[in-house]
Amino acid sequence: MNAIISNNELPQDDFAVEREDLLRVDNVSLSFGGVKAITNISFDIKKGEIRAIIGPNGAGKTSMLNVINGFYHPQEGTITWQGKVRRKMKPYEAASQGIARTFQNVALFKGMTTLDNIMSGRSLKMRKNFFLQMAWIGPARTEEIEHRKKVEEIIDFLEIEAIRKTPVGRLPYGLQKRVELGRALAMEPDLLLLDEPMAGMNLEEKEDMSRFILDVNQEFGTTIALIEHDMGVVMDLSDRVVVLDYGKKIADGAPGDVQASQAVIDAYLGVSH
Amino acid sequence: MFYREAGQFKTSYEADQSLFPIRQDRIGLAVILLVAFIVIPLTANDFFLTSIMIPFLVFSLAAIGLNVLTGFAGQLSLGSGAFMGVGAYAAYKLTSIFPDVNVIFLVLVSGVFSAGVGAIFGLPSLRIKGLYLAVTTLAAQFFLEWCFIRIPWLYNYNASGAIEIPKREMFGVTISGAEATPIARYFVVLVITVLIAGLIANVMRGRIGRSWMMIRDMDIAAELMGIRPLQTKLLAFAVSSYICGVAGAMMVFFWLNAAEPSSYSITLSFQILFMVILGGLGSIAGSFMGAAFIWILPVFLKFVPGAIGIEIGAETVEHLTFMIVGALIIFFLIVEPHGFARLWQIGKQKLRVWPFPY
Image (tube, rainbow over all chains, first blue to last red; front, side, top):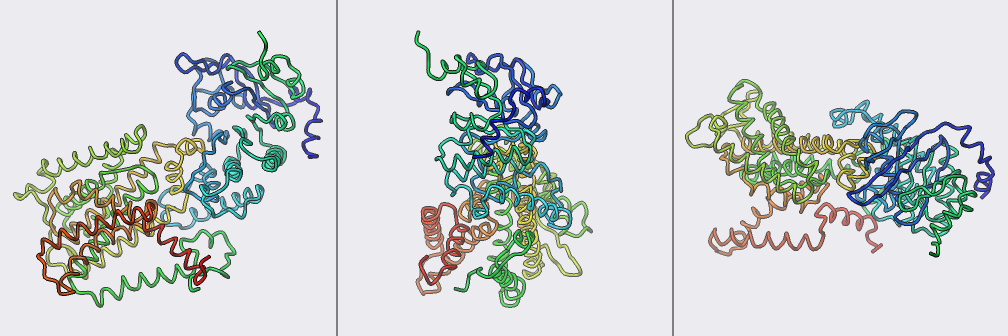
């Protein structure tokens, strides 16, 4: 818990000044036919921070993540990634630029083992061609073993050594979430998008996951964008919070400020008309 | 008791990633190879080689080919028969044009043509999935069959419309054509099949094999891990068709000696698909088991009535065989929908704890 407390004691106000933008979203709007999922949203994610995106159900949080990693293409607005305005891109291009992601409903490769799932996160870093792999000689074999070492470090970090060779379909839900985090970590991303990493977990699992998220942020220096419904977790973990409601941004700032904002309270509790 | 890996520790990742990490498996494989390369050639008669072993190996290779596409990459295909045909016709044309070039080399090259055709018919797979994709591959099947019938250049304007394999030699031994001995053909087919099976097993434990399985299990997540769907799927189509093409060329060069367009009809596609489903999607060993079940079992069943002294007509035996094999297919699919490969795994798991129940 020490880590969580000290994290909250960071000088929040200096945060925005000190660090440069990793990602900027400017005036982004996204609609599907007549349904407006996101309306004119702007916010930034600074290098090295944990940025929470919260909001009631259907607020457009997951759509926002989908815009960031290239699944959806917003009709309006620009996305600036590491100082460069990003053109329309495919998810695999976003991946190659260093954006990794986990899903709300676990999207692991069910037929593969934990090890293979995490190894799959290394796909972009492996280059050896088909024929070398077919013969399993020289460079291709060395490459596999090198990346296996990296993957073993992640397995070690997430404390999932015992399920290394288990097909992920057979794992309990909490562990699947952890493997999915491992798979995203294997990409060594600059920005890690976590879509409800703690949904459906019990308290201990949530605490474990919180610990891993903080460790990832502090040890690897990975920037994290986090969608989560558990307010306790959000308030403890995040450096800054952006709040969406009905596709619009209603608040942005340090956890304490957001919590006190009247617009946020209204969005969550409702207002009497 | 005998099948237990207790005490077999691995000290390197390399050892852990080997194809057969368990010692007993390695011994088993060595025994199988010993039987295939030494015992069978020494003991088997011509009938056993030509009617059982050669077709079994050819079908195993074709099943591996389809398994790459359907079992590993998750793209359902009904065109494997036609892709085998492309390999056969390509090899035939090649050996007509270059009669002096080693025929084994030409058979291996013919797969390249099949791979190209397969990749073209794989293009819709970017947009279409599952059963709908199967229908587009069905179009490939009918279109290619039409080509085999309507383009006389493919069968050298032969009046019968069939391709007849000429005599070809390697190191002074006849290996194709009517005069080739079953033993020579058997060795050629065995070496090619074992070689390709080994190479594909290597691909499957590396990055490319993983990328296929990623596309199969969760294509959206795969794309987010940086997998390009089109390239990955097309590579799967190309590799699968290459293997099917080589199998198709071997089928006519080292087994049938002659082939008509109908040899590569939709029936063949279904036969291969059944081998893959029954053997186990996504398993190379399963491809061999599936091929054995679909091809060898009927041949054996035909001899059972004669062997136990019951006199029934050949035609009745044929029908009975169909019925029994059909019933067995249903039975096995109910017992284990994941095929023989899974049954084999469960069996091994049981063996590990034998004689205790768990």
